[in-house]
Length: 119
Image (cartoon, rainbow, N blue to C red; front, side):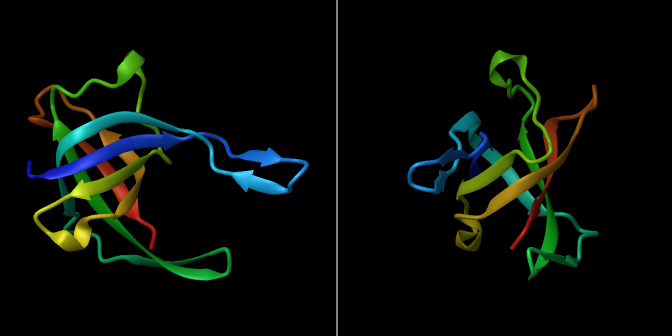
């Protein structure tokens, strides 16, 4: 595992009635450390339209060390995010992925998370 990622959840946005400005919610970081991020072989990218904008959804597998523990015994949920902070492929640095699902198995050698790039 040569990549470095930050696994986090963004809280509900806060709307200020007096200024009319919405600020993003606070981030809760679950994990910061080594990982392997790779595109899923069967993912060619799906064209979708969201908010009158064309997007291509590409799926990735994010593998974390098997020993990774989420603070407080929490669970990773769809919509949580994975930010690639360092990678030997510099094109991946800064990539933010949205968690789609997690895979569990008693015989796994790593904790695998399926995430998508919504750019």
